[in-house]
Image (cartoon, rainbow, N blue to C red; front, top):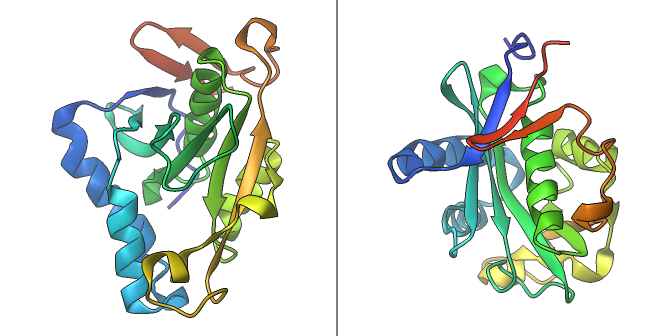
Length: 201
């Protein structure tokens, strides 16, 4: 059952020993879309998502267990070039039992806060048309389409005809950290050990 947890969610950087659990969660999340993509394309996409490329992997914890993950890619670590001053988010996944309980929102808020603090002007992500739930979350968080930065993953991996599998780009404009209002992170309390979001109210 999803959406039942009201536990506080703590977001922090992943520890080395958490790598296998994070990879398993990502694999589980992407395999769920097996009916939407040719097998070769899905395998290539999963392998690509599991490669962190030196980015910062974040984990969300609820009741002391792994509830979700996201990866923040600073300059030069995203799979494709991004506009100057931009960083990227990818590999966002939430454990089935924790979906619709605010975990994804907490992860995305933490990524936006870190990106803004680091001086980024925009935060990019890519999502597939069939990932309707993720798309709704991103649009509700202020992300807007940027077709100029779409990815043709079929051609990218060399396993599908050009323009047969387009992954849509979304962009979130970021205010400098010193001017960032509390509305973007109205439920977030930043602490040394991580970013804690209280979802109980």
